Image 1 (tube, rainbow, N blue to C red):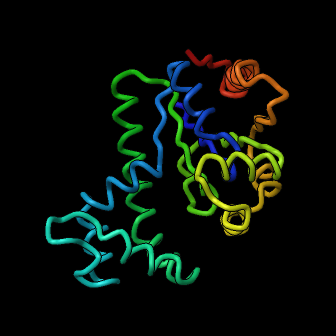
Image 2: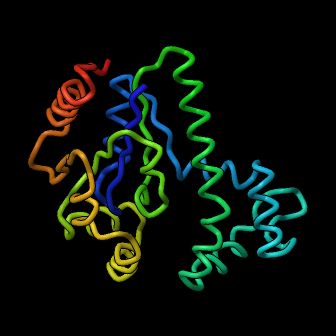
Length: 204
């Protein structure tokens, strides 16, 4: 099985690229979505957050007390690191188990989507990293429209992530989502690249 990681900064369009891959028959593991599920269901995450933040982090009905977690998470980078060290290893393991199930059913290529693929260490779970790249100002405009946020809020979020130029340098393949180059054409080119790189293996 070939595992590819899909990453990119806020507003780059990585989720749309993941959608195109799914349409091409590639199962995609969305780390954001799965992390939210695991925060509710994974016993090790629940135990870690309870130890770190106390019983108030979960409500009486077992659901996550999002304001309590968010207030702690965004108070400092040190706090964010403590939370991530609880959640990220469980997401990593869950992806591996998910990929194993996909392989058992005959799937030959899977993808993981993560904005923080490198920062989290998730890149070590995949064979190749594909970065979705877009100009900074275009990313800001997209994210402002999508999230109904101010420019200052979006710039603050971007500054908290790894620089896109660094991601591009570390990636194995780059897709340019600048609204000038056709994404369908680039997805086809990505398939050809993977076929050549991975011992002539073709995506389907």
